[in-house]
Amino acid sequence: MSDGSDADRLGAVISDVHRLLRRSANQRASRTALPDAQVELLLLIRAQPGISVKEAAGRLRTAPNTVSTLVRDLATAGLIDRERDPADGRVARLRLTPAAQDRMIDYARHRTALLTEALAQLDPDARAALEAAVPHLDRLAVLLRGPA
Image (tube, rainbow, N blue to C red; front, top):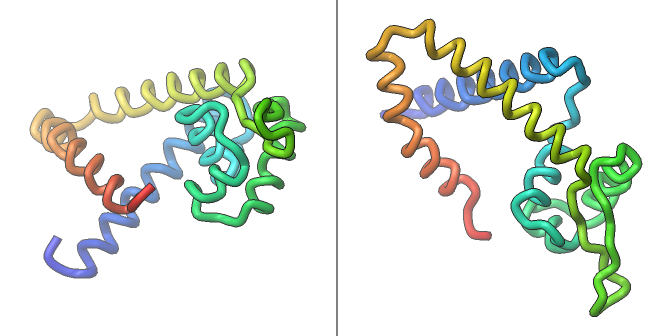
């Protein structure tokens, strides 16, 4: 990437692929997509079961009241449970429900199938180039995520 226009193109392509995969995977699963902010929180809770609202807000770089609203909506939808911290009853610990875990597994299965089908339509050199780019994209994500 030699200039800003290359970075713009990369960002646009990544965004487009994400949006298309998300939309298509949810269509295959016959369900409505959750808002991105809810998905981000679910992914964080899956990675860190028992995280608090305050900790989640810090990791997501958003206000605690924003996370509280997401928690309320996801709890109402039956996708997360709030448990009181035994050491500090004022703190709620967040965990995925079995319904959320099933939904995430199902989504990943559909997303993988879509990617597998699309990759199979590429010529072998293009497939190899994309596979070779994965570690670099992983590193890019780490750099963009910044300090924890």
